[in-house]
Image (cartoon, rainbow, N blue to C red):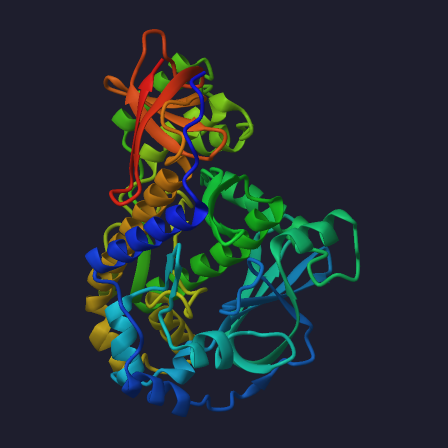
Length: 473
């Protein structure tokens, strides 16, 4: 192995990375600070008191450590042989006047953006991190979904109301997982594992599927940046099932009322499925004929290199997601194929614009009132707004990761690495390094196969451009 190049000082590397990340922000024309008008409007906003009071229920939140924009809180209890789930969603609509300064600013942003060098919020902090956020020990208005579930996780009754709640605990994912693993019967999430597994089984019965690939995250560490690749904890999947259940209930309400906005994804066609089956056979990890693709993907061991290669290829089956708004005749295609059910985004209004419309529409329908005119009049604009916001978020994420990857490798030119091949694309091999957690590609060497390993050498790492270049050894 070649001798390691003299190390650039951390201050030099981090300075160059900071400049590159700032240039990325500028190239994407990302929003800057909120205007004084928007901040003043947010400061003046207040929520009207709801008719229901559910502060006797011990709600709790589960979010990444350090989060302050808390969209959801849960209360879980047994109900006979089944379960009672209260799922509270932040009452952002109470603080955003339709057509007002905060509303217009949020429509320009579309969603909260998470950059390596800081978060770009959808709403001013006084709303997103304070008054609307379901912080522990604070009385908050919320849209509260009440689900009665059978023992197998099937919904037997559901309703929605606006109510006053008070969260009692703010948990992070490792902490919540530890409470469940310890069997703490008094923990606010004690039943989450049971309910989450039951809902995953309901997903299987519907024919739904989930990739659940390891996350690649940019983290701050020792004054700089690093890349972390981790497999989501089981509690994250269980928690997500509550959100998915709520989104499916919201879609049902809107379809019955013939007004709303859905999150859709086309199902893979026969040609795509046939190609995927052939690829799994070539990998030596064949997809059995008697399993749906959802069951097959759920059964993969995500710690194995072959499984990672299969999941990389399976990503091609989960494309084309978008939004469709309707007022009158429902759209011809209503299903989110990965869930095998109609679905709507309603559980993250602090961080995602479209959820505010879904909540307002569903609550009005549930209360027997007419859908507000402002919501109906602006429905048609949502798919474009969210499409632009999603594209901007994707470009920011990929551009940030690329620049951090280059920074992590900038002083390792000439070194060799053992890499796991994820996929062969034409004459190139897409691979992952173990440390640092970098994904890249190079011309495929003879004998390379997905799921196998190759030796690669780093030839270049350009922080400003966010690019790295490898060759196969």
